Length: 339
Length: 259
Ligand SMILES: Nc1ncnc2c1ncn2[C@@H]1O[C@H](COP(=O)(O)OP(=O)(O)OP(=O)(O)O)[C@@H](O)[C@H]1O
Ligand SMILES: [Mg+2]
Image (cartoon, rainbow over all chains, first blue to last red; front, side, top):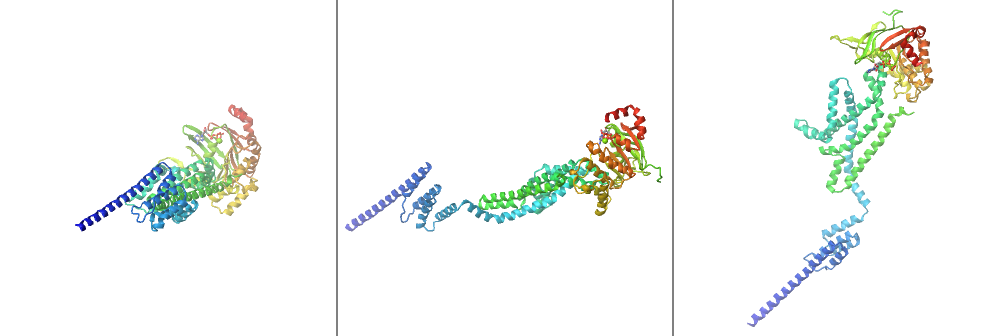
């Protein structure tokens, strides 16, 4: 009996002390929850230092199953980060690492603090170096397209212009229709039609061919109108004088009329070619990897706006060079007008 | 067959209409080799249109153009419709007839020498050296050797017109047409152009000149023609014309207006 009683008491004491411990730990835990809640309230009111002071009260305890310590220190680190105090932010994260050297949250945090501490321009340069190779590859394709169209479209434009002013009605009608069609519809639609639309009629093109075709036709139409205007702006007496010395219509065109249009055509054609540099971005929609597409790929891969800024700078470089070159050509083409 | 007395150019019944307007109305004209014909008349009387018709810059509706005894420039199609001859034939004819315009119409993108070379080079397919030689000669003839390498924009009006004359002469034309060659010039520049034309006359060039310069007409012309409303109203030697035809009221009033 005595034995029985003793065991019961012992058991009761054990049970009681367990209960007490449980109660105590619950009490402690609730205490931290309260702290976090208070800290949240302080943050909500914008009083970050107060929030930090509250969170600091969380002490490290062996075990720390609730993770309260890590939670509080990382929160402090973020708050200090927000307060731009990188020293204190790092030391808070380091406190965590001192106990848990592998804590990835703290490691990542320290990395981003370091990133934050390197100067902006250095980050930008790093990004540039990272994106540039790919972007330059795209830029080479853009320039290839531009050069091809600059070679093709003046020839196409001249043919269309001569066709338009032809007195032979069917030819001038065909050229009128061509200009009407390609100037009257979006370039994007034309590219889609050639690349995605024509295959349904059994005609397929590689992306590059489709791009050259779409841009070439479109720009020939535009230049055709410009060149026609240039030819018709040449004083009528020039054609008469050329004919009066016995030239044929085509001789007069080639030797007398068209050469005089060069200077007048340089500014509008220069504008078209600057527009062309930017319009090549549209072929990124038909599976061509040029500057715009490269920038888009970089931007999506890294979600880093530097890729877009860099692409913009490359486009600006191209357009600036073009503007400059065309001004020079214009001056040269009009050398005979200088007194 | 070419004979001594055969006219170089013979126009018969030239008629040119612009819509309902008859600009030239049945004009007949014979021009003998070496002859200088001056045509005067009020604005809109059809003088330019007549000259341009001779050079096929206008396609005439009726009439024939006989040059060196051959009827030129027009053919009749199977359907009986008359139209201009093939372009290359017209071009060949034009290169035998020089024309000088009121507004010079020099090619501004070519140097003075380039302007004069252009006909021999492009039309006659001469070598650049030959063309250059001809052009140098012609420029010397009009007294502009020192302006060879400048662009027309730098020349005075009188110099421009002399270059235009050299450009026409470089084709070695048999007939020269002048359409008011001095009308666009300042008065002090008229003399140099007429000096050039006078020199041509002395060399025996056959010329038809439309001008309002009566002094020049009196001095140079073998024949003066008064044109009005598309027709020749009166003609004669300068002495005869300015002495007798002055009785013609319309001529008198025209001359009074321009003198
Ligand atoms: N291309 C044309 N189309 C329609 N009418 C024309 C054309 N060219 C000339 N005309 C008309 O024909 C008539 C004759 O013109 P033309 O130029 O031959 O006269 P002109 O005698 O040379 O006059 P001016 O002394 O002013 O040069 C004018 O009434 C003119 O308006
Ligand atoms: Mg006239």
